[in-house]
Length: 198
Ligand SMILES: [Zn+2]
Image 1 (spheres, rainbow, N blue to C red):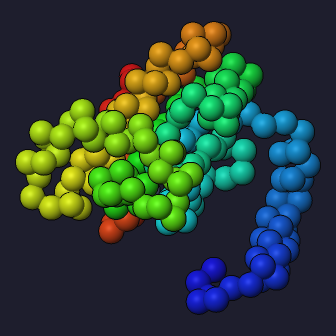
Image 2 (tube, helix red, strand yellow; image 1 turned 180 degrees about the vertical axis):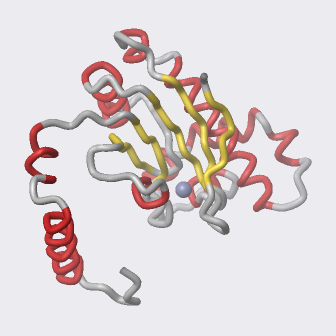
């Protein structure tokens, strides 16, 4: 959907067309999917509208259990901890993917002075400010703000994997899922592997 100013009605019309298309190709598709979800992956990504998990991986409904928030972070709040717990302990996903992306606005904000208009975002990205401070020597040595953003995106992915790896739900997992850190390039649409457990 590329219309410059789509309305909510347009989304509903597109949904009807999608549902009809799917059922024409596979009449029992939704019946099978409604029975249960058995996703292989927990995807933790940014809310950024340009990084839709299913689209960029050609995934289908039922493939990914998804948690998206500003700058793909797993904090101490119940939002992320409940998603992690359910994915790891109940759905028993085989892989957890943390996916950051170049040019992330949340990461950029953590490298700039606080914006008084967004107190909730400020609170949200406080761990990123601490991470940037911890790595300030490496970040300050980079030539541009964009380069610092993209490096902090990588450091953040690694930091989130560390949090997940030591989280309480992971310690309770019957079979520990593999952890993967990826970064998505907005300019070429490609995912890059930063780190991957075998
Ligand atoms: Zn982002």
